[in-house]
Length: 327
Image 1 (cartoon, rainbow, N blue to C red):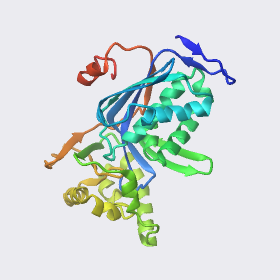
Image 2: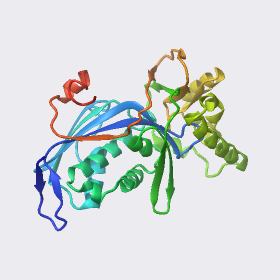
Image 3: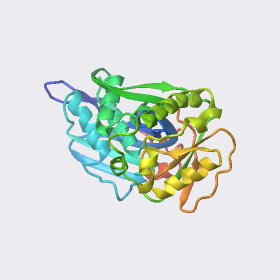
């Protein structure tokens, strides 16, 4: 493996080989677990990053192509630069190729995937990056960039995660979901923004509702890992979804429709995507204007590999496995 040592006070050495990161989509909140619970989903964005002699080059294929910035303002670039600031210095230049499959601004963690991909790519490009930025610090930095840890935690760790923030930063633990649980996501064509959804939340809630959600959140940990038959009751929420309903009426109506059929349905993250957790071959209804995806739970979290791959972005979009972008 080749490396390039840049002259600096820190003596930071960078790989010249490309680094590849595969980051999963995520669904946060999971009903009652506002800003705390998250689930990694089997839909992935892929990022290739390498250092160059100068400038910023960003190519985007798939979701967000032609819309997302292709300069230093791209979220992956900004996340990488935050890491380089943390561990030593900025490289002279960066080249990025992004293959996006996670829908943008739909409540499926596209921004968290970009942040995690950027943080892990930058750390991997530094020869002793893991020593300079240990795993715990990766979570803390990613959470600071995102603003909260509930999406970045499952993106990093995979599976089902419980995240919290203490005085010295974000923390998370991973739980193994019960094998019978199968996520279904209903993805609308309309987009949503987390900051808009958060603006609908009140500064305080009734004590009875807070107590209700505390109980349901605890039950959800048990239901999702050991007792899927309790998922319907465990995904009841009074803390955020009722307040956001008027801003995404179609999503709220779909959640109500599914729950009336006994399905453990909820808003995914800040929406407008709807997540349903089912445990058998359930025939999802057709909803005009929505895509319905049956996804696996991602159990690996973000993965990093180093070295050249033969396939181009266009090849990867047609056949990501054959192109070496997934497998």
